[in-house]
Picture 1: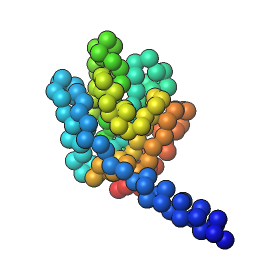
Picture 2: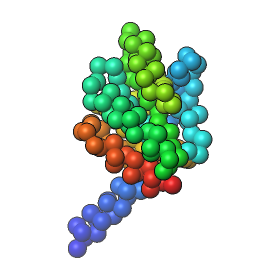
Picture 3: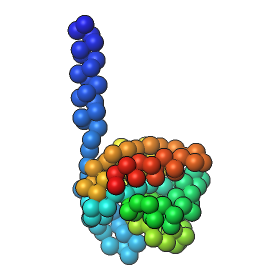
Picture 4: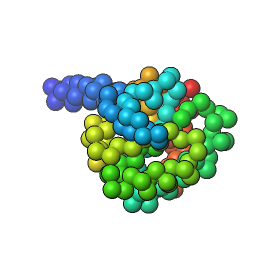
Length: 158
């Protein structure tokens, strides 16, 4: 019985501890201005996707979200934040690629400070964040169709 209570307590504490908010970390926006990731929090739920130019699944996921974006925005109010983790040597390539995703908020984490602060080890890594900046869901990797799950999580926040 003690073991059961211990496990139940650990489980409840684990759920409580998992509710975290965005860290106050600086990144570069599309205009080259240094901003805090918290500045993108404006009351609107969002999908935050960490990606790099060399990650094919990352680009596939961001393209899949983009191809559904107009339809999804008719059902839910949210935004997409694409965070490139490309370093200073390849950030220019990332900057040119984001032109394909009109309507996305694109940020550049050249030193990977945000990546570390959010415990991202592999890309793609995607977060669903509520309008207050609280992380409500997280997943890494991409398989075709998994973008629908992201949208379901966004709709649940409406």
